Length: 459
Image 1 (cartoon, rainbow, N blue to C red):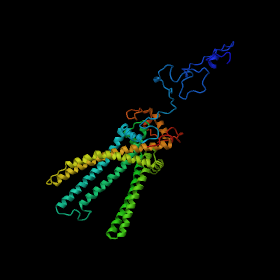
Image 2: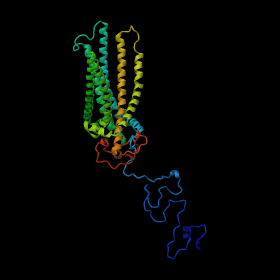
Image 3: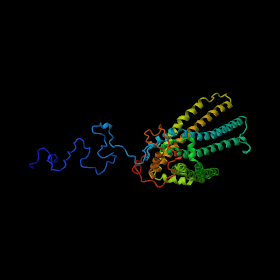
Image 4: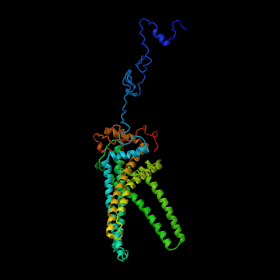
């Protein structure tokens, strides 16, 4: 042991007690053991804390002795030029199944006028055509019943001059027209609501007129997309009709071998058409959103959807099937009681005049058709919102689209909304009324951030 050492003291403590040479600055005592984050006696630190330490010597954890509950362990968070990670209805990360389902409801609540107004437009188109077609069909049915009661054959004579044939074919044509218009309105609604949902993801609210104005001339592109789908469906329908006609001819000619062959062909064609139709639908399900948001023509929008769904076919199919089941159950709960009520109030007395019974059935049927059309329109807009969120999700996964959404949110002055932006009313900055995130990309996406491949990838 050195003669200058004191038992029980370490070298550092002893050095602090040693006498100083003349002219030498007195050494500073070591900081207390209970205050490790105080001012360093050894000069400035080499690097500052990555959490934004305010200045040299100032603790980022508050003053000594401050209660831990009042201290921020990370100091003041830096902005880094980006807004918070949830400015709108969804987090700016790859979306889970819960994000998709809740985000769709949040989009409807936050933009009730735009979403429900679009649903009402679609419902009115379907209601007008369907109710008119159903009414004509009831007239034809009533005429047939009256002619049979009078001993006449309602199907005798020239089909071109027989009013019964005219009413029947007219009602069928109107129902077919209603289906076409409903399909057309559905695709247009997909595009319009995609714009609404993208703006909601950035914390921007959209009115009904604003939604249709922002879609603008892309409605013609959406109509072209619907026309392509209808032509493809018509080709498949014609093939079915051809096979069915061949099967009937073979059965009438009593050619057992030909009938069996046509039956097998019909079965194979049915299975193949269903499989191909489902596969194509999933691959092209994002085409309307791509057309409306990115201002693409029908074929380019289809190609865009094809590329975005690459590697996500089964996931997309599962989500859409799940939503279809949920929506179908809800629609059945609403419409089934109405049909049952109509049956209860129908006249049961056999002596009741046919006209009275037909009138009662007619009005209940028309009411049921109208309510069903409205429910279908509501189901359509919810599904459209979910498809728009799938479009956002796949762009985030493939293209770091969260950076575009964050930039749009920053331009709108949108902060972080922990309540899914269903209550907060963001006051948009000047110029954001025409803002659609991702519509006018400024160039290649920046390097991938936390929402890249390392982010959550499950449902």
